[in-house]
Amino acid sequence: NAGVTQTPKFQVLKTGQSMTLQCAQDMNHEYMSWYRQDPGMGLRLIHYSVGAGITDQGEVPNGYNVSRSTTEDFPLRLLSAAPSQTSVYFCASSYSAPGLANYGYTFGSGTRLTVV
Amino acid sequence: AQSVAQPEDQVNVAEGNPLTVKCTYSVSGNPYLFWYVQYPNRGLQFLLKYITGDNLVKGSYGFEAEFNKSQTSFHLKKPSALVSDSALYFCAVRADTGRRALTFGSGTRLQVQP
Image (cartoon, rainbow over the protein chains, first blue to last red):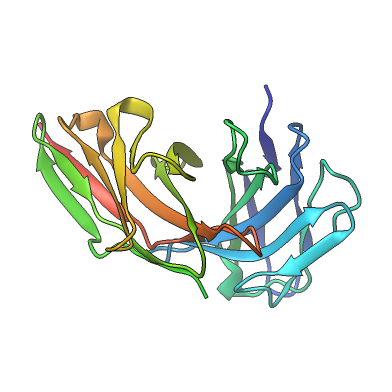
C-alpha cells in the first residue's frame, strides 16, 4: 500500500544511546518532515526536507540530525538520547504543489520512543 | 511566525447533536488550513483542507469547516455527532509561500456521549 512507513513502532533506549528512526515514502513526494508529539503540546516540527540533499531545522531540532540522500527516505538520528526525548515521533510527506487535487500531508503511524 | 490556537482542550457533545471544534490561526500571507483526526495509538488521518476557493469545505466522515478570513478562523463542524467521532482533533496551518512546514494546534479531544 502506498504511504509513509515508519520503523520501528516502539523503542526503549538508555540515556546516552544513539539510534535512527526510519521513514520511507513511495509516493514520490518532494517534501518530508519529522514531528514529535507530546501530551498537550500538539505536534512540533523537528526537521524537514524539500528535496533530496536539502534539509532544514524546525522548532525543536536540538539533539536530532537528519539527511535526505534519496527522495524516498528521510531518517531521523538521535545522537545521544535523553529522557526529554521520550515522545511519539511522526514522519510526514507531501507534494510541493498545493494546486494538485490530492495535495496534503500523509503521516506515518508513528514511533513510540522511551528513553530511560 | 505562524501559529494555531485550539482554545478548548476538550469538547463534550451528545450523540446526534451538532458539534463544533474551534481553530484560529496566524500566518503571513494566505493560509493553507488542515484538519486531522487521531484515534488512540494511531497516526493522523486527514479530514479536510482549505487551499483556495469556497470558504465552506466538506471532508471525510461528514465533517466540514468554514474558512473565515476576517476572523482568521477555521472551525470544524458536523451536523450530527456519532460516538465513533470521539477522538483527538488537530488543526494545522502553513503559509502559501516560504517554508512548507505545517504548524499544529495543541489538539482538542472530542467526547461524544451516547
